[in-house]
Amino acid sequence: MKPMGPIPAWFADEEGMLLIGGCGAASLVDEAGDTPLFVYDMAIVEAQVRRFRDAMPRAVHLHYAVKANPYAPLLARMAGQVDGFDIASGGELDMALKAGMAPDRISFAGPGKRNDELEAAIFAGVTINLESEGEGRRALMAAQKVGKPPRVAVRVNPDFDLKGSGMKMGGGAKPFGVDADRAAALARAMIDAGADWQGWHIFAGSQNLDPLAIIATQAATIALAGRLSDTVGLAPPLVNLGGGFGLAYFPGDDRLDIRPIGVALDSALDSLPDILKGSAFAIELGRWLVGEAGVYLTRVVDVKVSQGETFIVVDGGLHHQLAASGNFGTVVRRNYPIAIANRFGAAPAAQPVTVVGCLCTPIDRLGDKVALPPVSEGDLVAIFLAGAYGASASPSAFLGHPSPRELLLG
Image (cartoon, rainbow, N blue to C red):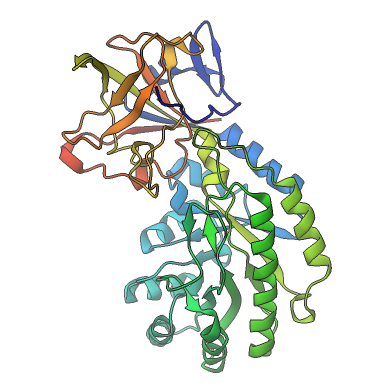
């Protein structure tokens, strides 16, 4: 038997049926029309936003990383909850604008921006986070074509990383951002060429559960932004401190306490380098805001035994929930929290079972030797922490199965 991650405390049951946003899982499937189904509870997202606001200094802006979950109804609600959107493609630019986010509160990061994406961003008036000197050159060319100066920030590849992060985005050789020792020169060159410089984007890592590591990285980020700004000779309008706030996906994970991060950041902002004292600051979060709000519901289509091991076969799989299968950013496969939605809280059977999807590949495994109540055909399997990097981050076209349904509550 292998352990699973902790089920978030938001969820309860009524007479054995999992409740999501106060509604029974089976009734939500009926409302949506079928499984597989992603359900997102907006009340949980709003609670996370309040948790952030309560813990962080009031001066710190909250940005939402659209890549975490770009579901259109969710984005429309997020536009009223956060101070800005961070996007990573021309497609996300279109989504962000349609959601109602003001262009001057959208920043566009990501390596490999196409010329037409740069032109669209400049025309719309969003901030381009430059990832290289070459991208800066192409942004100036695009600006000439569009006929307006580009709004730009410089994404910095810092000379440090976020210790213990699930995905390291900075430190060492990286495809993201401009190395710290060249970032100021690029900013100065863009300013001299007539660009509207918006500051720095410094993102060292993500998915971290250690408050002390995040505190240390934020302190190093502020110090770096101060040194770079001194070299440029101008105060940056905004310093994006990145994110890094992680979720407790796996066995042994503890939920991140962000209160000490807020206390330390408040102290850091009280003792800023002189050149940053008029700058705004932002924290960019994706999974931390929406991850716990999502549940993936998939129906059992078969229960079979092979060589003494029981397999629960469902109508979903990694083509919808790649992360839960262990094939999205993890080295060792571990079990996400999983339950039988229509027997939520029931005692597990004596023998563990393995939950697999409907794809013809051995990596389509959603629960590996997990303890679940007795399972029958037609039961609903619930996979938690499905609100981030689920439907949009999975290979939905693989083998031609239907795309999952999505439903926003609240």
